[in-house]
Image 1 (cartoon, protein in one colour):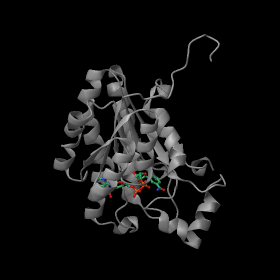
Image 2 (tube, rainbow, N blue to C red):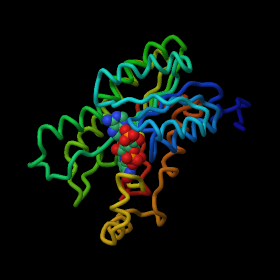
Image 3 (tube, rainbow, N blue to C red):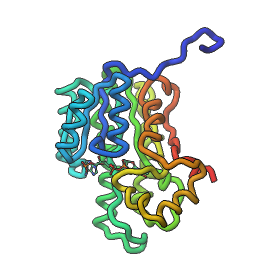
Image 4 (cartoon, rainbow, N blue to C red):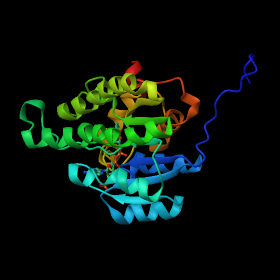
Length: 257
Ligand SMILES: NC(=O)c1ccc[n+]([C@@H]2O[C@H](COP(=O)([O-])OP(=O)(O)OC[C@H]3O[C@@H](n4cnc5c(N)ncnc54)[C@H](OP(=O)(O)O)[C@@H]3O)[C@@H](O)[C@H]2O)c1
């Protein structure tokens, strides 16, 4: 309780409609569970229908199957959510991927385009699509999931276009935050460090990879998707109502070194 007698805003999301991309696994699935736990009604977006259906049953949400690399499929996502759940007030852009492991000088144009389309263009198109609904409701929170590689180079794991796409999310975040602030639509980015998921399992499971991570991450425990969720839930709701345009690293201290 504050000394002023004003009650600080809470974390509850009762009845708010949330869209989570990348909800078929890893961080997106963990965020979807977290949002539902706070009372939100959650639309789950990704390509694998069985995964989405299972989670939708578990959290009483709805599944929207879409390949977000395809602008036509992406264009049907928000209308489907509005029809099934109502206007979205929360958008979490967690879908993302690395295409290839080539050194920067060898990355193909096709891989560069694939990376930018999924990791940067799709989040912007979805933000555009939710905007009119958030404006009508009179509030909204958009959270982009980027990466510490949008802020620092990662030695030994080449990812130039991926890093560029993730840094781009932070630029998009500051600009949208300023343009849309007058509608009480907040836009922030969470930049995770390494955590275990389908895309990093092999790194964690190899002895060399495991010891690389232990050497570079100051906090002693292995990162999990659940370690990233708290920051996303805080940014989704009113507890962070005076925060916009920020990129917050959740990385076990990687970028603090
Ligand atoms: N794991 C890490 O260490 C780490 C670190 C920093 C940042 N991140 C970021 O965190 C986010 C979540 O990653 P994660 O580690 O949780 O990986 P993950 O388990 O592989 O999740 C990626 C999600 O994106 C979805 N997706 C991929 N391509 C898609 C497409 N074309 N259309 C729609 N959905 C698509 C996948 O679902 P479908 O395959 O079903 O489509 C999946 O649900 C990503 O943006 C990633 O870049 C991860």
